[in-house]
Amino acid sequence: MPEKNYMQDQDVRSYYDRWIKSPTLFDHRRDAEGFFKFVKACINYVGKGNTFKKLDIDILKLHLYDDLAELREKNYEAYDNTKHEIVSLFQTLLEYEDTELP
Image 1: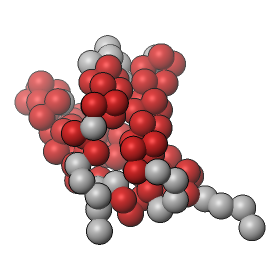
Image 2: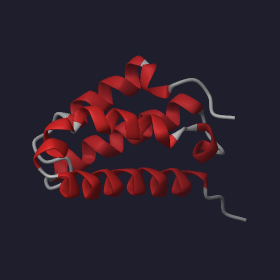
Image 3: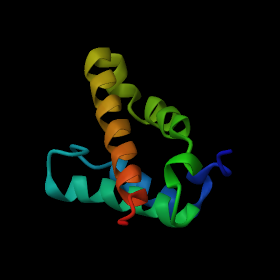
């Protein structure tokens, strides 16, 4: 069962807002680093272990739908590809965080 909406946490939201307002999202090292800080804040919010199950990916998708509205309206295919890239990387980083060595 997913925990409460992590995007309501002040720290998580702060990192998200800084990243989503960056000029390129991923094209510049600093922009990508902003995304990684956002993901790390999400992980810190729910605590270690099983973060993939605790963080509802649909919450992120809803925020991306709103925050990337300009891109979505101009070029839906580019928006869809960008959204997919973000969600995929988000999931991969959560899975990485949950990986344990024997």
